[in-house]
Image 1 (tube, helix red, strand yellow):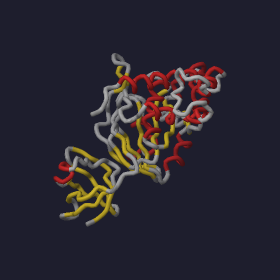
Image 2 (cartoon, rainbow, N blue to C red):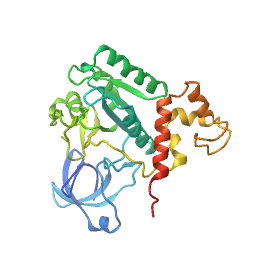
Image 3 (tube, rainbow, N blue to C red):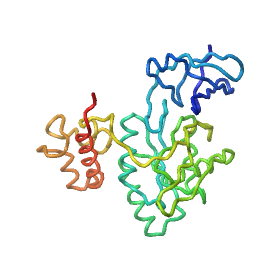
Image 4 (cartoon, helix red, strand yellow):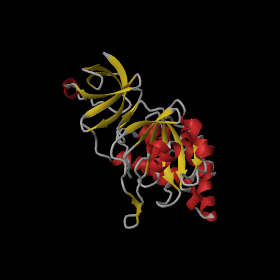
Amino acid sequence: MTEGKIIKALSGFYYVLSDGKMVQCRGRGVFRKNKITPLVGDNVIFQAENDREGYIMEVKPRKNELVRPPIANIDQAILIFSSTEPEFSPLLLDRFLVNVESNEIQPIICITKADLLAENERTEVNSYLEYYRSIGYEVVLLSAKTEEGINELYPLLKSKTSVFAGQSGVGKSSLINALNPELQLKTDEISSHLGRGKHTTRHVELMEVREGLVADTPGFSSLDFTNIEAEDLAYAFPEISEKSEECKFRGCLHVNEPKCAVKTAVEKNEISRERYDHYLLFLQEIKERKPRY
């Protein structure tokens, strides 16, 4: 038996890369019985019937996994958001950041379509990006069309398994094409009626880009917090997590508690009021979700 990595899953088949060769595999029935679903990014043990076909016998332990998109063993998430068309959404970006942070995956923020920004719009977007940089995030403003900022992304991809994720229509496939023109991924224009992009990516697949592996993922526009508990939410906001160490009460949720260092920092503009409002919104969503049984 041989070890390899699943780089594509499609129609019940798993395409495993091993020693430079691609083997099309099916999962053994034991996976269904044990409720284990192989994911793109999984390191697996497989048994090859010939050079092209085989069966996955074992899924190796994962260091992390995402549900949407379904992928495992990710080093970093490149969160792709447009500066315009569709309009930049700090709220949606924070949803993605919380989801990625809670899975202990390193996020990198990429804002696309810089070439479409008017000067005043660029100033507004840059003000947001400077705040994210100030709390420790890697941020790149770029354009796949003019290749502005593309060179900044190259070294971040080397020797890493990265997932490209973000809102529909923000230019994920266009960006990957700019990074590796040989891929020629399909792209579509923004729907003028819906104000969002058409879903051009139908499955998750790892591709070789700039000496690393990159996953282009199906677009999606909403995230819930199914696997995050209320007391853990603050850890997904680096600036809130850091300041919470100064709160008087252990387990402070930074809402109504007295002598809360986070609320004081918000009042002093040390923590973004908008980010704090997003924290409160997400906290309420977590509290209101139906209990799991």
